[in-house]
Image (tube, rainbow, N blue to C red; front, side, top):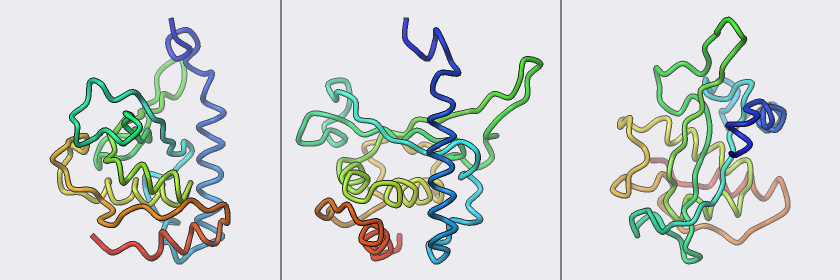
Length: 161
């Protein structure tokens, strides 16, 4: 078994912590335009890397991994949660990222991840996990930085889609 199947609430505090950090950045940097983003709610976004053997080569990075964005609200019109007799259930979506999108998340942290989420959400296609989907950030990732202000500046300089 895995943690999700044996204890589905184990990661809920972590997801909520991600959401809280994202909302704080949205308030601290209102020019990013995140304050009214419908997908940024109680549950935040997060990303992971998985082994890429089963994925198309176009999605696999130089380390043999594929980035995955996990969030609720990526697909417009899909509810972010439903209420059941036992309580609220959050609906999370998993989207395969292009190598450069993952590189931007690694370099720019939360600002990069949330901006990629917003751009994926804005796509006209409802199927985001595709090797044929164009990258939502059409420039190579920058070097990694630890400064929050530098991360915000880098994300703000991305060309519009």
